[in-house]
Image (cartoon, rainbow, N blue to C red; front, side, top):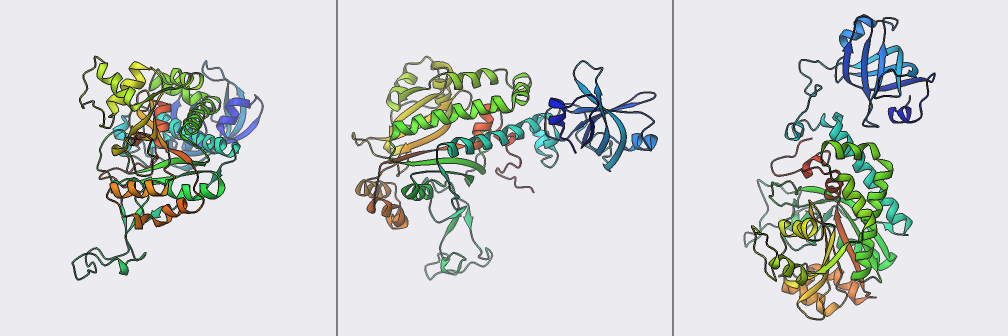
Amino acid sequence: MSRIKELLATGQPGDAVTVKGWVRTKRELKDFAFLELNDGSSLAGLQAVLTPTVPNYDALIKQVNTGATVSCEGVLVASQGKNQRIELQAKALTLWGEADPTTYPLQKKRHSFEFLRTLGHLRGRTNTLGAVFRVRNACATAIHQFFQARGFLWVHTPIITASDCEGAGEMFGVTSLNLENLPKLANGQVDYSQDFFERPAYLTVSGQLEAEIMAMAFSNVYTFGPTFRAENSNTSRHLAEFWMVEPEMAFCDLEGDMDLAEDFLKFIFRYLLEHCPEDMQFFQDRIDQTVLATADQIIHNEFARVTYTEAVSLLEKSSRTFEFPVAWGLDLQSEHERYLAEDYFQKPVIVTDYPAKIKAFYMRLSEDGQTVRAMDILAPKIGEIIGGSQREERLDILTQRIQAQGLDPQTYWWYLDLRRYGTVPHAGFGLGFERLVQFMTGMDNIRDVIPFPRFPGSAEF
């Protein structure tokens, strides 16, 4: 069997091939028929030409419709059409699975992304979602290549955890208890000693803390896996289940962290343009006419770098009227981030040194006692795409920071032990994988860059 992508690239007239895939379109003329076949390997399909010499031709042509699955044997010939170099002159056709044209929902016409989300089991067969998932695959491959080439160890951090990395409490609980008959203590609270893990457990919001453990033994590590947020947000930028990439580097400060993050994004974009040119051109033509220019800008320009204090000043001096207030000490909202990246700098910008009160406990406190050594990379059209920091390696200050955020240091005894036994300056960042794919493709809604989106009220399959 030959993949269509390979045939379109290197197939030559006279080659005998067998192609298996799904029928995108069927056109019947008096003495022959055209089938456009696609097997998911490429955006373009391969045209198969059938004549009555094909065994059982009349019956097959009646049964084969858009959405049907077939196997087609034949010989490649030079195509007479303008948009294709070769086509398949069929000698035999096998029908594997029919698709009733009166009920098959993906006929040859434009469908809205909202409609396609109701067809999660079929939408991968469309041009747009097919291109998205090929790009997603290429991005994942590039991520591993980037870190492996630099000697990073890929670590698999736990999906089930007892720790809240972000301290925000937006976590999905994991339990084996009967929710209709929960065991209770004398004070009325749930008796977790009878639960599977004998304590409250959750789906992870981040693998960072566990990655820090591994970095304290292997120097440079990275995670790449699913994370979960029980945040009731129905927006185009939020998912309840998403994938995160989180490197952690021992003997690294904030400057090294920023340098790695910038190199990382440049590498991913360069890899994508080299390996998915057809799909990227599709997004340029059909989704966002700035996709290729954005990629070129990422690859060939240094990112701007400003402190949070400087960023607030720029926002206050702008003539823009923002929905959310701008003031030192308040977190930057998406509209603020996009103004900085799209309008002021017109390229990605790294904002550093945020107020300690609006950042997580693990970020290193600066000498001024008011800010932390944190950084966010803001990208045009999407806002924050990477968040990172130099981690707090000083035991006493980390303990104070945990307490200041209303958390119990005993819960993080193991995390504090890393500062007791061989502490070292270290840093890392987190990248939301779906936001990266969304940024690269120009897709408006993050629910359209993951095969099976999970969001409030939606958990099919």
